[in-house]
Image (cartoon, rainbow, N blue to C red; front, side):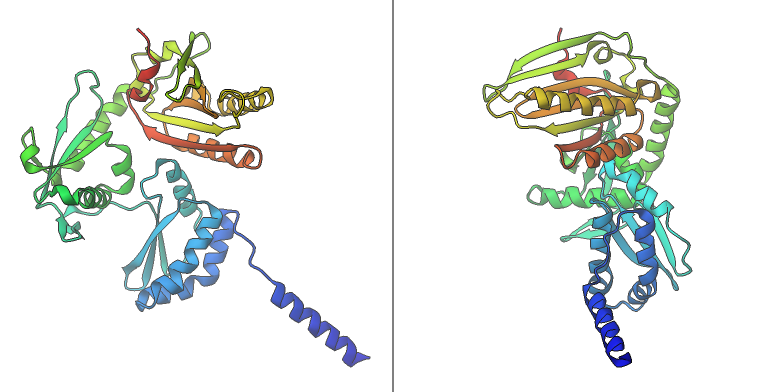
Length: 374
């Protein structure tokens, strides 16, 4: 009898062993628990310059994707016995806050340094080689463009001495990578409003060494922050306008916008624009939602408005409905809270309706000019 019972127990153990699957990662703590189990192997493969892609990156990437899409990474040796893992959103504004939170929750590990976003590097040490082109302080320069109607806009023109039209995409990509490393990724994607890369013979102003760009941006950003610090807008008594138009495909477009906000003279105090996109089935209804869809769209919109209050610095500009798509518009004093709020709402309704969102910088709300009627 004992042998039979032992055999059954062993068979049960083998069955559970072969049926075991790793549970998907659903939280920052679960990710770091997994990393802790593997950190020694990952450290050794980096230190010994082993098969890094196979033994580290190919294991890391799926776990980050389970946690959330939009996490990218760089890794190498920070010091002789310390490995560094840099988590980056690769320039995507709405993913910055999640990268920061992930790294903030990292436990202490003797042989590891974890960094959120690509850090700034001394310009003397920044030199990028890409497809035969070099990007460094010797062949890059810049000047700024001032706009009378948009005095706080920071528009930078960068000149590459070896610019070649046929390799335009390579030169632009290389310049952006250089800026990420020189300014640091956060400053690179948040302080410059518009950026253009041109050949030297197209320059319209005196060129300034790229090594002075960081100080220039610090000065402009400080000036801007001091000018608008603490400014808010109460929208309770604002006036709204209804707009109607026809798309090129003949379908109707309906919009409701806050006309008082669109004519506000302090727009730059809320420089971030959040656009929520909700797709519905408008077939057979001229691209418009049916009654049930309309109620759901309003429910979602009200939820967003309740979470992003005007008194906290998040202004609801209005909405546009057309061709099976509703867009809801906000202007914001920052991008971190809207990123989290909209991500959570997207998750909450993922099995009910398709929601996506984007966040971008637009100090003077120029993307809403189409709604301004004279």
